[in-house]
Every structure is written in structure tokens, then in C-alpha cells.
Image (tube, rainbow, N blue to C red; front, side, top):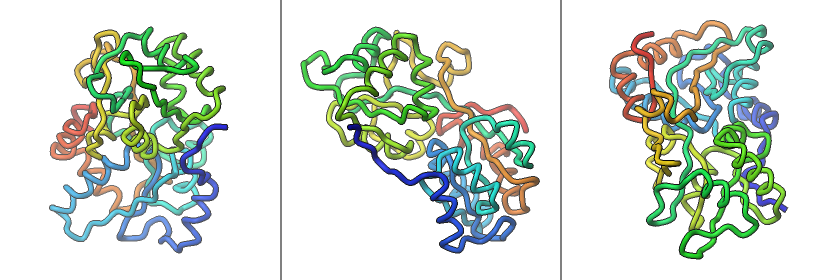
Length: 276
């Protein structure tokens, strides 16, 4: 049986948002947000910077929602804006949700194994797929998996057909660690000796995680390589609102789109457009 870290469903979180009496959409302050964990740290850094201009600005982040939970919550009016790491579905757009892309960040392989900062694709396939994977010094690899249906599992499977097959084998094994959220995945990858997991460059930088980003087949997941397509694996980060943003949310979006906001995003490992 797989060990699951965190089990709160999107529907339950949406219910909890109302149960704890959050202010409905359109309220002044603090703004309420939640969604993909890959964007939470980045938004908190941006919010802190924005407060230097607007001292009264506050944003409250509901953890553990994921992109789909965030979309459902903002559609229900429980959030001012959601943080989403996938395109909106046609039905979501038809229901009046709108999105604003604020950056793209590389999807990366991470480890806390000392001395490991590069792997070949065949090594990655073996370390994921073997029944008892071990590092070159013989110590065990502690895989940190995401749920089968999670978007990060699909992103990892796109590295190669061999990685996709290895993932299927890993999920079929017993006793595996499976992290439900992006933050749980990073925390387990930090905690487990000899870990091997996935994350995003934006999360690692914003949250100052103590993990090594792994180069694959000699290609590092830098912003330059991501921009050129040499490293093709990444996530698109979006703010989603129900209809037009309320005034406070729009002002925050305007700050994110400003020169100062874009520089923060670049520093935190995001590609951004030249202008919005």
C-alpha cells in the first residue's frame, strides 16, 4: 500500500472555505487565494513586495487545493483569485472564468543526495523503475511520487517513454511515498535520505528549498534552456478569476505585470513576457 501524504479533497476544501466564513468574492482585504502549490510561494513573495507600495494589502492563502480545487473555489465565489498551473477547460471558460498568465517555470527533477546533480535519461529510468533502486554508492533511492492522476506525474512521464513505463512500475510497487501537494512533495524530498522527486524551479526558489536540481543528459533546467526549448519541461502559472477581477485583485495583477513584478518573477525562476 502506498503511503499518501495529505488527503484533503478539492470538494472538501471548497466546503471548508465556506465553513470557516471566508469573505465572498469582491471583498476588499485580505484577498483570498489558493490553488497549485507551485505558485503559492511566488505569490507570497510578490505580495510582500507589493505591500511596500500598498501597506494595507494582505492576501490569505488556503493551502492544499491544487489547480482544480482552486478553480472550483473561485467559481463558487470562495476565493478572489485562484492559482492555476494548467489551461482552463472549455467548460470552465464557458462558466465565466478568465485567466491571466504571469509566468512559466521549469519542471525539474530534485534530490537531496550529496554529490548528485546530473543523471542520464537511462539512469533516471532505472532509478524510478527498478524494484529496489540504488544510487551508485549502493544506498537506496527514496522515490517521492505524485498521484497517478496528478499533472506532475504526466509531466514526468513526458521525459521519455522509458520514464513513463518506469513510473507505471513504481506506482504498482508497495510501500512507496506519494505526496499529494507540491509542498508535500518538496518537504518529503528534503526529509527522506537519498530522495528523488519532482518540483518546479519557481517553488524551489520562492520557498528556498534545500534540494539539488538535477541535470538530465547534460541539459540543465535553466531559464535559458527552457526559453530555447532545450529543456522542454515546464508549467504555465496563471491567476484565474470569476469574470473581471475585483479592484484589489486587478491592482495586484497590475503590479505583477509591472517591471518590478516581472523582475521578481525572473529572479524566482519564471519566464515572463516582455509586456502585458
